[in-house]
Amino acid sequence: MNRPILASIHTEAFRHNLNRVRELAPESKIWSVIKARSYGHGLEAALRGLESTDGFALLDIQDARWLRDRGWKGRILLLEGLFHQNELAFAQELACDLVVHCENQIQWLEDFHSKGAKPFNVFLKMNSGMNRLGLNPELYKLAFHRLHALGCHMHHMTHFANADQVDQSPTVGAQLECFNGMIADIAAPTSLANSAAILWHRNALGDWVRPGIMLYGASPTGSYQDIEHAHLQAVMHLHSEIIDIQELRKGDRVGYGGRYEAPEAMRIGVVACGYADGYPRQAKDGTPVWVDGGASDGSGLICPLVGRVSMDMMTIDLRNAPQAHIGSRVELWGAQVPVDDVAQMSGTIGYELLCAVAPRVAVEIK
Image (cartoon, rainbow, N blue to C red):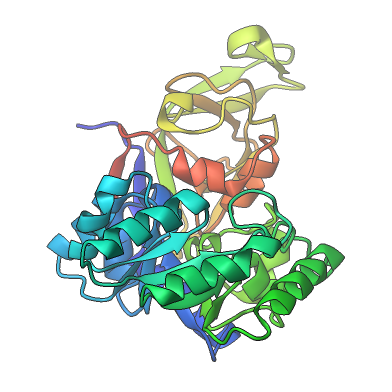
């Protein structure tokens, strides 16, 4: 038999979360962001669960090819545009929309157009204050008109640096003011809001929203408490089993380095999951793990991590779950344990954990 660790991907949760986006941004169309293998969930599951989206947004043009080969006829947005000029013909063959964020990309399109190519749908990106990708505001209007002159179907776009500040960050207002000021006399559809803006800055949505992490049921801030009100559902449930139980005496130590010392006689459950599966090695003692309590209703109990996570195993305190036994099912994150709670105990964010699940972990699409 295979090791019992399994990542279950729930397509109904995808559908639920997409519907929540529609409820929060009812006047906007939706680019569902599926970069990084759909945040570690896999393109196949995303295509199944998010098939009612208005379009998919991604980075790798080969992922666009994958979608087309599987029958997706809707829009596809390349979020960073093209990385090489020789990809333009391929992007046109796949009917991709392009983000354009720099002078080189504009020149590529001008050269491509001079050879008689059809114009693209373009989302011209403005650097309104994040200082990552995008044209500086003083260059933006000229760039817009150059691309419009090629016949490109134009859209305005920017990205917020601090929309994940739930207290209505003034930085969002400053970026929005910059953006709106530059496009005031250039009519075109807009795209502004990522997951954080959809949740907390709905005065800054635009005609196209770009939800990413909220589609997967995790928090843009890294704190699950911040999204409880949004009633999102975890799409990935990472499960495993207890494969051994150790009986400890007071003072016994657990795992590499003996980080955890038993305060009393206790049982320790050994779980088939380690950092080679993508679980964070830096997880602290007390990180929550859900253990099936054996009840007919499927209820379980939270048992804290104790000791250092090793390559293939981790250890949990079973004092809260006296009925736990070898073979008891555990959830590392999912419906019972928010991935953001594990991430907070590990000094990172849920995004990283979802994206880092290792290829050796079996995946089941439900």
